[in-house]
Length: 344
Ligand code: AMP
Ligand code: TRP
Picture 1: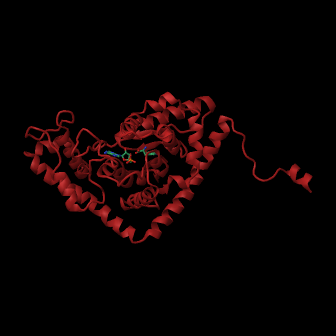
Picture 2: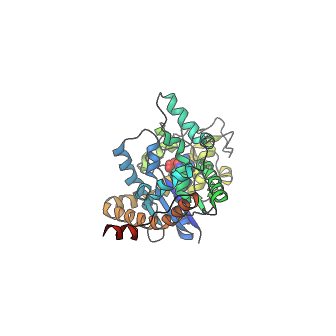
Picture 3: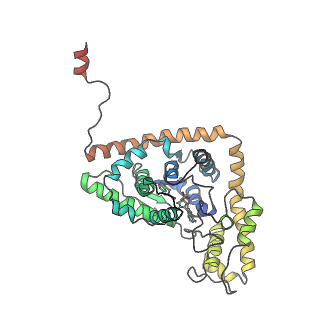
């Protein structure tokens, strides 16, 4: 059976971009057709300036939202990265396979590091090594597929390179995974800044639809979306990024094609109105389930406890095999018989 792994970082409130680009696919498709694991990757949230209490709160919220999107613990494994030691254990070994040049070429590193330096801050070493930890997340489980938004494709590509290199040098150990990116809405853009991704840790609040926004707040954000000059509704990502973004959001919510939708609208106003309603409708069941789950935090904790146990059992043999293959001496449990005899 195909093995699927994906994750979400608790660095901010989850957005419509997370949902349309990744999470919806996990719940609607992946968990039904594959042996799937979904992870709140909390270690990744420590790569940038963070507040410990906030990370804890956001991790709980992300886990609750994963279940609210419809992930069913009977069908898939939902867990928190830091609950399973194998991720950090494997990450170190992969650091011995990756090169620093490779890390410095990662677009996300370059962008985030530049932003941090521009603010006069320092860049954590973990921001540079982050893609190796991500590779460890994926390779520890022998995942065949990694369903992600477009911004993560480069990291999955690097994961493939590391898997191939490790296998060539030390013997076949890892499955070489591939990214699966949705056809539409693989990169939902900020409604106020259609040239930038709708990111949860961005500063442009009015351009970000959060999964837990009140319906009226969502409507307002969509209605105030920046559109392009011109009046005709055409689907042109380069020339008309604002309108193209709305068309993609509407297409993702309704299962239609953005190009076909463009033909059906005469004005930006009508397009915005329908997009706003479609977003509210798509997120309504998620919000309802989230509310119910919040009333029963013990349930979420139980799911995460069982998830971590299942995940640990899956990752351990692969990580042990990688340790052996790269030349680390296997630990033998218990005191050796000779030493015991001598002590007697
Ligand atoms: P992150 O919020 O970076 O942890 O992302 C979790 C998942 O959501 C990843 O698969 C991302 O690629 C995806 N994602 C995040 N933001 C967007 C966006 N604006 N459009 C599409 N996918 C996104
Ligand atoms: N780096 C991913 C992001 O920012 C999150 C992530 C960490 C991830 N580990 C992963 C995604 C493993 C897929 C598989 O969105």
